[in-house]
Length: 526
Image (tube, rainbow, N blue to C red; front, side, top):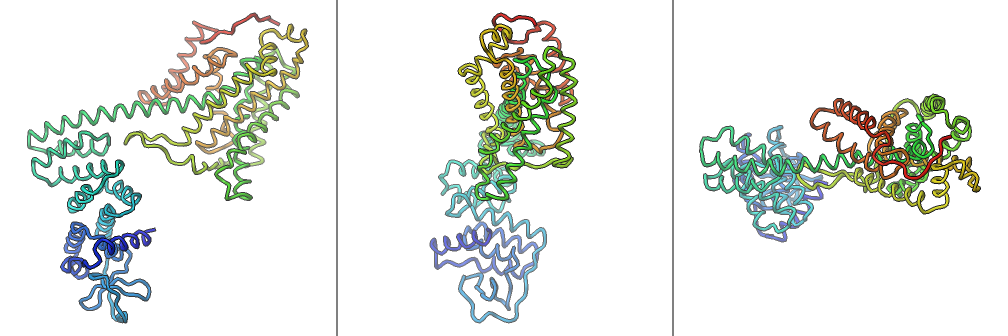
């Protein structure tokens, strides 16, 4: 990668000024001087701003810069080039000496190369260089940074260069230039600018500069505070979307059917392992289409969890309707069996599910706020699942049957609704949605046999708080708990936040047992 970049910049240098040569004194110091002289030579080459310096400094960094008498050569394989003029040297001198590079010099070379990339004709190279120099630029780079800033027009790169130039001016400029630099940094929302200004404030004697720094700090801290609030809200919505996915299935199996399913978390875990299996199949047989494996993992996770759920309903739960304690104990025992089965098949260690390429990285909306793509996709996925569940329950024959059985099982049976079959399909639907939640969870963390244990209590809290059998209540409760939990975590820590939320729900249910949204319509106690 570095060799390719050097080649591109060398072509650009030849196009820009084919007859130019580097400063002889700087090249001689670089080759024959002591440590301090080498650093001065690097600074001189950077200040000169000749793209050909990239080739020389890069060769020194890679151990390809050598001396032969008084000549400085770049040796690449069996070819030699004069470092000063760029002219090919033939034959290659037999007697040559390496130029040693210590750690201090290596660090200076890395910074110098990053600075010289600012004048590259390639936008991506300039942007990467500006980001690299944002917190590590040296005062000797200021002339080149200003030169690059004068020529730069890209709206993403120019603000970075302005901040780099302001940072360097504060360190070594006149009073007027330092005040101007402080005013430039005042427009920044970067935490690095705050750190720099705090350092200036700590050791500054000039009262005018101190006042300017204090004013700039107030402005920067205000923007950073808004960034922190935005990040906190996004984290809350992200957690709420995960709780929503985890609770949607439970809203059907518990809210609509009245079954306390303690194996709900393990159904999520099965969906996550289903995603893991599909990922491995794609990696082994379709590596070129790996980024599309989620298109197959989502229906696979739903199907496998739904089948397990329907088998569970047919074999165990259908005999325990109306007996909540027995149902709780039975499903808890089944959850332990499922955990042990997964440990036997996949092992006790966590397994890793890799994100597709489009879910890697994130969007930097502010300098201190990065929105990860995997979280954004999960939020959108939760919205899509919620919409499909709502359409299923309100616009399909199965949804009509489910609502009828929920409101009055005896009357629904009298008018021909196959209640036993509806129970099986409803439980399968809730279990399948739990599998979708597991698929989503696999994209933000490792998958293990105990995955579902972390979400079962939270899922029940969401369903109870929102109102038993109410999708709208599940949505409001999930999002409210997610945001409230993140706010409390930032204020008091994760443990106290969990305790506070649990106390809140207990008090709320005492005052309003039906939850946020009560079931409408007539029901018959059986």
